[in-house]
Image 1 (cartoon, rainbow, N blue to C red):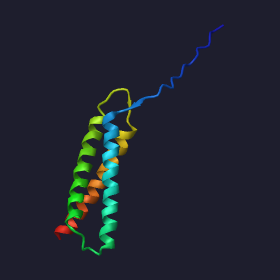
Image 2: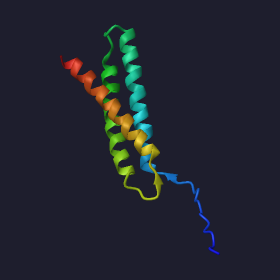
Image 3: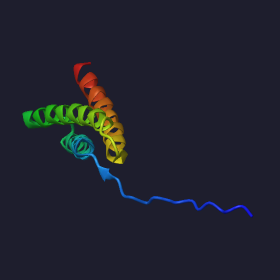
Image 4: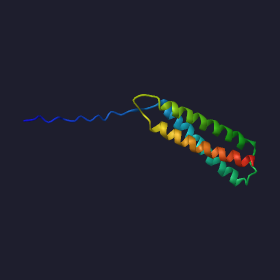
Length: 107
């Protein structure tokens, strides 16, 4: 009689990549900053001070760094890529948002 083979399932938790976590945090802060500054600018009816521009530039830099760390996080072996994916997608969306804001400001 044939012997049944047992399947072994492994439920080992994979650790998050440090670069992926940095990407997610930076991109999320950039997206929150974008939404917050749009809300403040709307409340002030477009008459915001210089600090809005400085915070906007900081948000652009954070989105770029979030994208960079997200792509670096995909190179880590045996890691969970959830934070890298989330950070890369959020960073790209916020970078597109910042790009549209800058283009509207130039027009």
